[in-house]
Each structure stands twice: as C-alpha cells, then as structure tokens.
Length: 449
Ligand code: CA
Image (cartoon, rainbow, N blue to C red; front, side, top):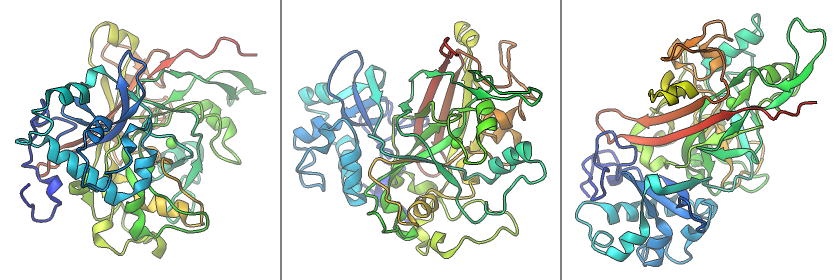
C-alpha cells in the first residue's frame, strides 16, 4: 500500500480491489470501507456468522478465519467471526478491529491471490449481496437515543412549546433517554403501526386506537466496543477506542401518542414499538478521511465543559456524512417509480459528536457494554430539505409533501416504505457508504379495545 501524507494507508484512495464492483466511483463498499455485519445465505437455515462486504459481495469472515488467513493478526486464535453476533469482536477493542480490517484489505487488494486463486474458498466465502440475508449485527443489551441536533430540538420545541422552544440545559448537556433494545430490528423488517392512547386537542377525553401520526426519524447510530466497568467513566480522549462503528437508524415515532404521554417523564410507547438499524457497521478507521474538527456551533454558543472537550486534536469526531430519506408508497412501487427523496442533510450539523455522547453517557459511572447501541437523535440542519422527520418536514402536517403519483403525505401511511441512505464523499478520499436502512409500515392490529 502506498503511504498517504496525513491518512492511514488503509484510507489511500488509490487502493483497488479484484472484487467486482468495488472500484466503481459510487460503490458504498470499496476496499477502503470494510464494514462489519452478520449474515446467512438467503433461503437457508445456516448458522449466522460475521461478514464484511466489498463491492457487491458479502465475504464470510468465519470461512477466512478457518482457512488460517488471519494468522499473525490480533484476531488469530479463537474464531470470533463464527459467532452469530459481532459482540465478541466488538469487545476485543480498536487494535483488534484495525488488525482485522488491515488483513481483510490485504486479501482483497488488486494483485492479492490468496483468496482470488483459491476456487473452493472463493465458492465458500463469497456470496453476492442479493443472495445474503442480513441479520441484526449485535445482541443489543441496551439502547440509548440522544437529541443531538440543535436544529431538530429547536424546531420540535417551537411546535410543542412556542414560548420556550430550546430549554436552558440544551447547549450544555447531551440530552438523551433510555430506549428499548428488544424492539430494535434490522433493515427490511416490517414495522407495524402501533396502537396507543392519544387525546386530540378538541377531545374531552383520551381514546385508544391505531396511531394516526406515524413518523420516521433519520438518525445515525453507533455500537459500543469494550465499554467500561460500573463506576468508571470514559475519558473523552479515549472515547474513539470504545466506538466500534456507526450505522443508520430509523427511530419510528408515533407523534400523537408522544404528545399525550411525553410529560413528565419523556418518550415511552410512542418510540419503543420499533427501531430499525442498517445491517452494516462502518468503523471509525474507515471514516477517518471524513472527520471534522468540531461539531456545529453558532456565534455565542457556550463551549462544552472540560469533560466533553477532546485534548487530542486527532480525535475530534464530527463527521462529514451525507444522509437522505426516501419514501415509496404502494402505488409508487406498483408503478415501478423510484422512491422519492423527502429530505437530505448532513451529520456535520449536529451539536454533539458521537464521542461526546458516549463520554457523557458514562460520565456518571454508568457502564456501557459491547454491542450497546446509541443513536444521535433526528438529524436536521438549517434548511427545510434537511429536516429529518415528517413532523418537521411538513411542519406538523401543515405543508404536505407531494409524491410523484399525485399522492401527498403529512405523516406515514400503511404500505409506505421508508429508506434511509448515508455516505461520505469529498472528492479527495474514496467514497464510503453506510448502505441502507429500510422498513415498510404494516397496518395496526385490528383488536383495539
Ligand atoms: Ca429519536
């Protein structure tokens, strides 16, 4: 590998792979990416195992390990990739993740023959993406959702509390709540419209039934690596060593249930009926060329307290990551129309970084464990197009979005598919994609007493 002036050699944009599709300019998974996931061959009952993707090919890492191809790396020994989740690998820490990623890149670089010229291994370890069933990448013990976009917080606050949109703590504390890990599902899983208790402004009493104001929330998630012992905080400079990688998240939200239940204790049944994650986790090492020195701050915003201020310049982790949300209605899919984009924004507009979120979470001694999931909160920017949920995008339904079939949407309807995509691109480094996070809304259960 040729050395790059400021970057790790694994980020060198000149690297090419012998795998089909990996060198396309628009590929999500070039040789510089090496995302991690869990899969089995579609339509089989095979035991799930860990994998990566290069171009349009899923690579069975367990099969590579069994063939001795990780010998001499930090993950030689026990085959952690034979397990049906990435938790054990996540627990091994950043040196092991780096060592594995470097070895995988070596094996699939142009000119590397160990896998390319081994027909039986190629047959066993390489599976076209379309023939892989992607599964939840980790056993998620705990899930926490933050609220890290000041633009989202201000927009939502001004709808629910016009006199007092942004509470005084917002610019000092990374706000979050504990979500529900049991209902986190992988991309492609249907999402059932929830039943719940709501109360219309003009109704005398609350009622129970299907949510009428179902929404998506465009978010970026990250998985915890080694984590910390109870009572032992994580220093902000060490935070990147505890973040295994990032994914896309849709935090499905029932706005009518939320409005009636959220005070005084915050989100509950309006949120915990389903959260969708993308199947691929992209490491911080792959994202290194897209690191930005600091998160979004406006003139006059307070500096973060010392425990949230990195001293290592190289470990500031605001990320130049473009994100979009698309919707495809049943009619659109029947007519073969492409999904319609309803928002496009950037993760660089967030008020708090993922390392600040992680460090704040552990700052009281709360123990984080390998495979824990954290999400950023809705990613919204300063423009209308960059608002990451329907509540903001349609301003509570007052500005409906037109779909190419002539249909319009204030919130989501049954049959709608929501697709989130994310990618990094800057014209210098190789494009790094996060893939997709999809889900179709299915009707609410009929029994609603
Ligand atoms: Ca959320």
